[in-house]
Amino acid sequence: MDIRRTEDNLYEAYIFEQHVDPRGIAAVKTALAAAPGVEFVAQFVGAFSLFARVVADDLGQLQQRIAEDYFEAGIRSDYSLNLTGPKPTAPKRGSPPICAMVCCSTDASDVFALDRAVEASFQRLPDGQSYASAVVNAPDFDILVDLGAQNLEDALDLVVRLRNELPAGARTATAFADLRDNEIRPTQTAPS
Image 1 (cartoon, rainbow, N blue to C red):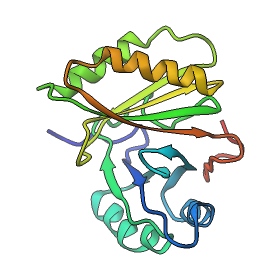
Image 2: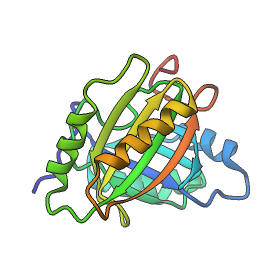
Image 3: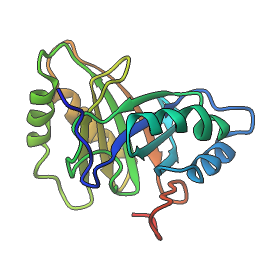
């Protein structure tokens, strides 16, 4: 199986930082945002304390950035590649102000088919809510789901709905964020 590239012909990876260095979350978030390849970074509450979406020309460049630029920024994280590539609904392309990042682990033999099936069930969301996902190669989960809403209660409702769509035996770990005055998108002029 080929790892698919984004629409810009780049590899996309995700950072799930659980242990923030002594400088604190704000300092690490700002330092990481200044590193090459960072498309999104924000503080979260839950399964991880900092999440980022990064891109690279190839695996070697990504590894170099992990070893140097991201390490210097204070990242000591798990990383994961987006295995679904150019999907326009991949995580952190944009989001309403409240966001839930849900890491899903399943025993499904075809996680790509499961990802498509779950995505289809979220096609008709009310205005102000969003769904995005990617199949990933993380150590503890198979699918990363990005749920967005205007408030925490609606985001939590989306998480419960997602849990109901997953097969029996699936496990999740969730982190929430208020992206207002939190998210940094270095390549955009204004937050989405």
